[in-house]
Image (cartoon, rainbow, N blue to C red):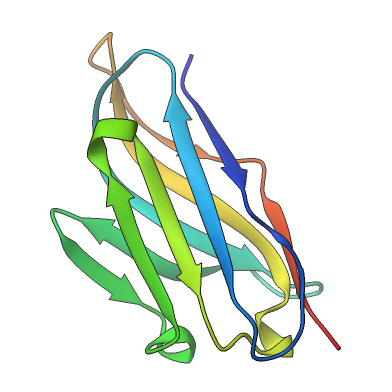
Length: 119
């Protein structure tokens, strides 16, 4: 059973920083794309950033402020968020494309972590 578990969310003032982490665990053979999505109240879930093979991709609204990285040895993806704005408030979800030990390739989601930017 493969699981993604996020951590690092919380309440921060505008202009502040947070670092999210997501660890993939279970019977993992290989991890392909890893990424972060977010969903604000009343809005659709949107892509924030992805990383694969060292290549990164960001939604325009976070470029220059957020940085995605991964530690393949730890099956972990990070999202460093700087210069946070109230409009960054959302539940942030980790997502990963994983081939498990049975060689089945599936897409997985974490349970989400709340990020609130407010003074």
